[in-house]
Image (cartoon, rainbow, N blue to C red; front, side, top):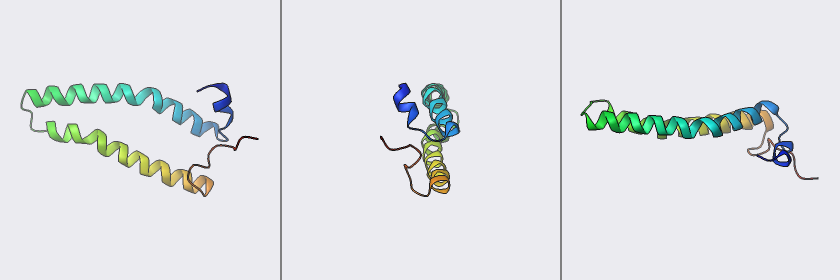
Length: 84
């Protein structure tokens, strides 16, 4: 994010979490997909749950973020200041 985009965030903790997840999710997705397909290729019996787990994780984290954001701000998407 640019400095102007970072200035919109009222919560430094929310900004830190957002930036951290933007860097970590692609790496975790690649490692998870590689591991799941390797397990699938060897016929491991947990291969399908390993493939489904990242999708369920994103859904769970999306719901958790929405609940926390609503509890903090009262309105979803209100964690940033409006342009003045």
